[in-house]
Length: 350
Image 1 (cartoon, one colour):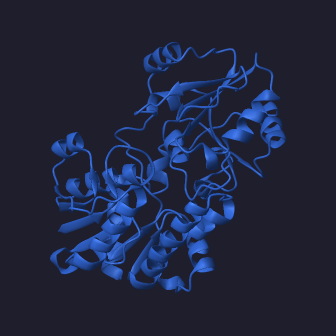
Image 2: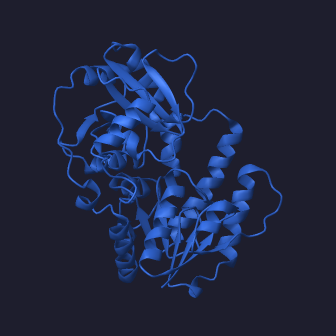
């Protein structure tokens, strides 16, 4: 089959960038031809990838305006009939399947905007998103929570929204062996006498970092430590919190810590949750994280709220040995192969 995938960036990263690479890997493994449409392209990654990449010429516009021009060009110039399936991970309306990893009005509702300039961009993003959900035949929501949010904010028939959770790469995420765990703990200077928690975050504003740092100020530094991977943390952080840098492959880190923690204010899915569980490490997450829809009591704890007092109390009261579901991804249909099959079945039924 000929598959077209549209996204703003073709690059390494988290979120939709990682999802795009999972789609690419899965479709190629299934014997499909893949065509990528993006306006920002990592040349090194492109050279390593067995796909055709189209990077349109855009006007020399600043920041987000370049993205809006890209969306317009896709909407007016993409020849959908040239492909068997067209999928977009951004707010276009020219494709067969729109992947929705979050609903913009809901993001605004959850995160207070103060900049007038930012509010202008919010209106433009909503304009594109509204047209997308009204026009595209199938909307793929990455969690049941997102499905509900789409219906709450837009007049969309429930029948056109399909919930399919995003996949994780099981070739990359799996429990590390004892030697790797020891080596990783040594490299990260993890004290085995302490309970160690990992927050992977490149967007601290909504990940609950502020509440988490406040919670660790309430905890005994000789017993509990927080490691933050991704974006830097404020210099004025508690002594039992450390920034460990941006780590491209978190798999051994997941295996080396005791818990992954994600006390987000709003998280449409939260891929770090199944990644951690696939590596055998239990999780603590706020109920606002979409991936908690998949959790059982053996996999971790769902916080009722993300206030510092709640987080600190939950950590102090940890007394359960969690027996994380074996091969969490396979058990919940989260392997790349299962995801590609679901997409093809979805399209055949649309």
